Length: 488
Ligand code: HEM
Image (tube, rainbow, N blue to C red; front, side, top):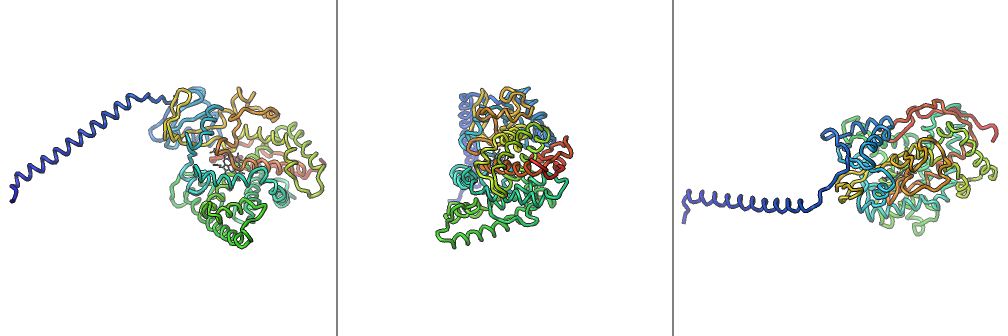
């Protein structure tokens, strides 16, 4: 039986109307349920602070302060004064809570993975690689951290010291000897790059390698836009060059290790431990390569800046230099010509390490870093909402007079006493504590030893400013006048 066209139309109309009204009824009910659930929930109280302009928020104020190396003076401190230790803002497109103080640092840093996860800009992750340790969480982070941190622990470094001493001596012979003036910052950058490649990877640094790596590092915090000639595009191109080089080295090393009986050797370098992990199937080739790139990034600008700033502080505080020198003269007096420094010698550099610590308290190579809340975090009567960024800073404690008396003065002896946990954080803390902090310590102290016992130096520009791009750097490269030490 054929249906009447009018009847068919009314039937279709009726069906559509029924569908619409039942859908509306369903959504109303859901909305009602959602509203009443929302009413039952306690209202989230956000910390005080300003979100700035739509979309960009307070990014311009933050960038400007960062560029002038005045993040504390011009961004963090005025807000601490106005709002307290916890304040909200919006930077780089993300609503962010900035936390300051030992208690807040402990909460954020020690609860990595359960309350927060490390949150790096997309450009950093793309250039370091999705498989590097800083982008990993949970079990994968644990495995990678095990390989990296074990090789860089104090025990692991014992076998590295002769190599490190040779690298520093050779650097001074080729870059300092016979010169009257050098750029200290360029020198420390070249040295830390060589330490990672030659001491940790056993790969000889060839001409042009440092420049390619520096092109990658220049893009790590750049806007991730790939216009031809943009910083990020240049960095990505350099990353491809590095990857080609490293993949070749990893495969070569793998072949070499597989040919060796059992594939294992005592006294392995960090590189061989990574390749061993690859052979055992614990990590992939991409993970080996990405972490090799990351370690250069993590070690390079940080250690070189800490070294350069330590020399600046010593030049400006002759009595500290005098005390420090006594320590090194004594160590040198007990050494034969050309003899290597040992872990025991490094342990004797107690005052020198206090000088370095005080330098990093005042001039931290990394002033803090971002996390992302993975749950709502209730702290101090406020809520840090899930999904928001959290920025912890060294400034909130390093420059706090209640924690460090007369905080802006340079006083290495303040470290005669132990400091309260989570107040001194140049290396961060918690599960993401710097995996290379022991290597950084040993490299800085060994370099100090060979320089202060062989050279006199003075700053060419004592008032040279520090800029940030985005990590701090001496704006003129810290030129110094040098002359061989006549007597100790
Ligand atoms: C003075 C020198 C150094 C300073 C000030 C420094 C500082 C830091 C800081 C603050 C963090 C934590 C970042 C965060 O919480 O998000 C970190 C992480 C890290 N650092 Fe260093 N670092 C230095 C040298 C080195 C060196 C020499 C290496 C290795 C060759 C290294 C390898 C790492 C690694 C692998 C991580 C990531 C750890 C993880 O995610 O589990 N760092 N560093």
